[in-house]
Length: 253
Image (cartoon, rainbow, N blue to C red; front, side):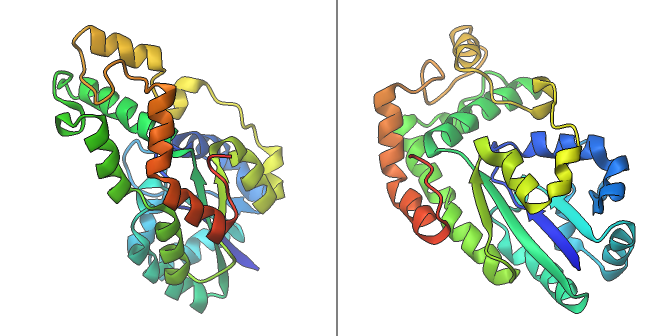
């Protein structure tokens, strides 16, 4: 049976790590009945942005390599309508699409946002630019509360691309989730140098950049206090409850 394992994110939840592992293992995957096809010409290790523009010839060629394809890109997370073309082709080719989402507790997601913005500001030579428009923590959290709606995004993907129930797991169960879906992945090397996985900056590194005037942040020292973290989780409590009710995952324990 033909199958597509479609990883749609979320951003800052191990996507680069997964993609680098699969990219490195690409040559040997067909021997395991798996294929992580190339797409694009840039340096991004993900291949999932083929989904919005996927064609029958491309998909046919990919399936000639192996019966199970793995597609991954974190930017697909909120773009369920981009899956309609894939849904049509998969149905025509009698291929099952299994959607996979990896998440983190909401306070960790937001800290990852802060870290990523600091890194991007430095890499573009704009380290003195206010992170996320200069919002304070409350403004930042409420704005992200409107933008980050995992339960809704996943449900919309399931509507756009019908198939088995979406698999939703925490970052800490990423490897286990993919091995459960494709046991052959036990055979590949899952170790990866940390710098290759685009990790969030540690709180101390965020604080050092902020203190040195090389970045600004809605969190003055780059690390929310325990009280602030608890408040962030309370803001997202409704979304956490929706995830647990719809997909059986508890982000906050």
